[in-house]
Length: 371
Image 1 (spheres, rainbow, N blue to C red):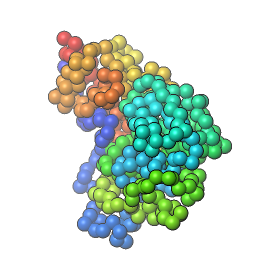
Image 2 (cartoon, rainbow, N blue to C red):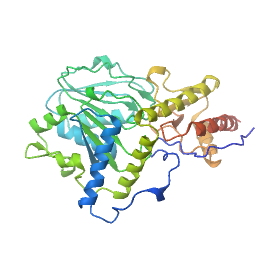
Image 3 (cartoon, one colour):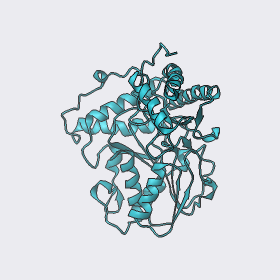
Image 4 (cartoon, helix red, strand yellow):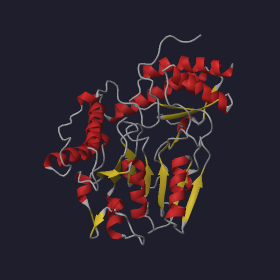
């Protein structure tokens, strides 16, 4: 039978992701709207973004945080175009975005000494194949496959190369070993449910040294330039952005950071996401037609949770349409390049009670679509 209780918030998209519980756009501090981002007030707000992010994430001393254009993609491209080429490169890819970085390094930068280590959706490649005399590029969480790196034990402390980590659907939702990560990128619109278009670039001292001692042989567009006269442009990591940011998006991001602080910090956000995953796992255990795309529990994402369904693709599309039409679950189809199925965002901004309310509707939609 059709359930009677609906989620208070039916937004389960994997990006842009659900706004935080209790979100109210009228509560944003918009005092700098209409002001120059280079004014004293504008710089103060942008600097606060960098400092607050570092504080909540517990970054080690000397790690820098900067706001860059182009979302997570822009941050990753900036790192790859500005730092790669000094050493051989190992790239791990097991879903669409990781494989996109492989394409960029091999077909755009056209580096000669590149080793690609790949795996199918829902699995991980053998991380122990990494050679840490090389630069190593990987995603922490496969947003489109639902498979995540379980920990940082495989990363060498005495590495010679840099570790470059796309962590856009992991930051604020998973434990990250910062001392093992030299470049980390993410975007506001993932785990914090803030707005798109802006990326965050986190650099270790080792990454800064690379930027200051190595000049790539190719030209760099202005948006990718992190150094001036051979020295790091420190202003970028104090909120002096390369191009003009949206101060409305900045206000929205600061609201999201304040919310993380209000619930007890990053660890509490991680625990909320893990609790959401446990709710989904309990449902799958008693539901014979629904399966995790990532079957190995240790590497199963607790943000972008991906499923296969015992239905043909057209029936899965009908299922997704039924749920959207009822206003109980929006945008939960699997990524276009991934196997047909469902993808439910379970990050910290999603309430466990909303997932619990949505699950009976999954059962209903499955039987309706199956016919």
